[in-house]
Image (cartoon, rainbow, N blue to C red):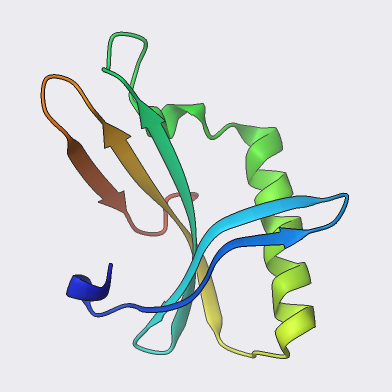
Length: 99
């Protein structure tokens, strides 16, 4: 992500009894809440397809908690880093994945 110009604000940011944000990053004044999904291969579908409605709701709750905790007031979005390991490691980065 740093190679793409992102500043990493946090990794594995935990909120007790709620959950965890995988990566929080910023680029061009926009905060990205990044969900990392991984699969061995794509036989059962792409990793990003596993971010369902309940997970998106949970991520929105976690993102609001993060913004409340830090006091940051920037535009924000939800991205997904989709990792597939076979036949070779591949990462697809999907910006604004929930729209």
